[in-house]
Length: 606
Image 1 (cartoon, rainbow, N blue to C red):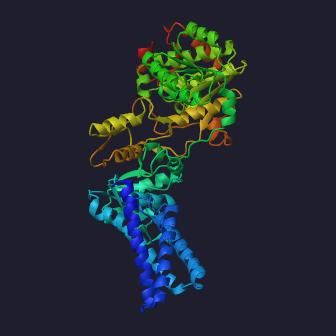
Image 2: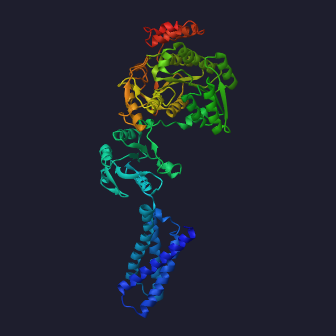
Image 3: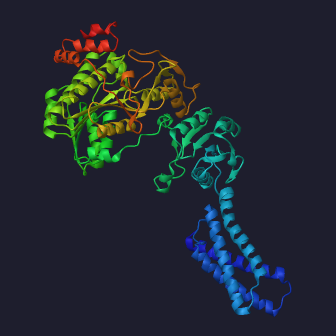
């Protein structure tokens, strides 16, 4: 129907309603007809008819899509009808010297009833007769607040969604048994499994945008006891700003279940450290290195140097950043190996970086157990070359990406990282450069991490392999890790080891169960198999050794380890004798640190 036809039809309909309302009002109170009554009716009818159409246009009653009518439209009707009745009363007073209050009162009620009824019948016609009834998924809404109410309203009136709300869950006892848009609040979050079963729920939506991650984790644990898919409503700010629609949900992600809020950055200090500066990132094509590049780019450095050994990975991050920031600052891709001392010194001499983030490393624990020489060459010797070049060419801040596996190391990778920490801490004693290290836990989604492995196993139908039912790990996201690196650089005074408060360690088997459920399966469909602890693995990880712990935070959720005395002279001699990589002495020392001397791996080194 065209706009003109729609408006014409509504004008005719409203005119009939206005005349009907005022005639019924008069004849209800004055059933006997006379000339005086006719004069009053005519004057009142004309006044009410004209004033109604004036106010109807003013409040855009003819422009509204009544098939989606709600409270806002009712308010518009009340305003238009009330003002038209008041106008008619004023005209009655001016013409007749009297206002027929009771007549106008009855007319007002009939007017509102008939106008509102005609409009909302339009919506009822759409909802129950015109709109095709498709099979919709029965959906439970967690949170009966403003966000949940907005969501239910949208789901009820939307033609495009395949979800239908069948119940609320809310921990506020005052809302229990109440109905919101006809949907009942059935109980608290602890009742989710029972409610989901009783209502045959197929989908659950968490509609509390302000929830902390700890609360999300708690709610999800209850949701995971059902067979329903669990999703999260977008942030209210994103809905209001128009970035997303109220019914654009996202699946619960593993990082939502870490139970820890993200670290807030000191943007001012980081900006001073990065803006209009030359920044070098080694390992720039890796998971952590590439994310550091993305985060650094937001602070508009003068020049960003992307250094890496892998041609394809450097090409990809170079293209990504140039497409987004190419006109704002200089981005230079550099293919170089940190084990090539001359090349590293050449890069430092040519570009004179202000800050170096050293992310290049071999980090895969079991793989390095079988390749200790390569771990030493990359993680120790490579770090030494980059750190020495930073000293020679006046780099202000050098940040080493270390690992929680460097604490009381039981594997080759952790041992090489601990020696790398010793190298930069020793350099810090005599250099003007501020050398610091940042220890990470396991990074979700990084190459070689457990999440991609689990996802692949789930896609292949299982089982998901877990080493041991009691094994725990600390986890953080790639953006968190990258932000910690930047914050550490801004806090650096020299010699520190920075550690993120990563909350409680997570059982790997629980992580596997959550990932299976998030993928839409149950543990009956995708089994879990315990494969045994791999070479070099710990049962429990540590972030700081007992003699390194500083209990005081230097920044919210960031701690600093004490500088611990160590015999660097021995390490230096071993490194010096290892320059040709044919003696294997440093590899012996690494294996000794990792308590591996008793293993046959020593034979592969010497």
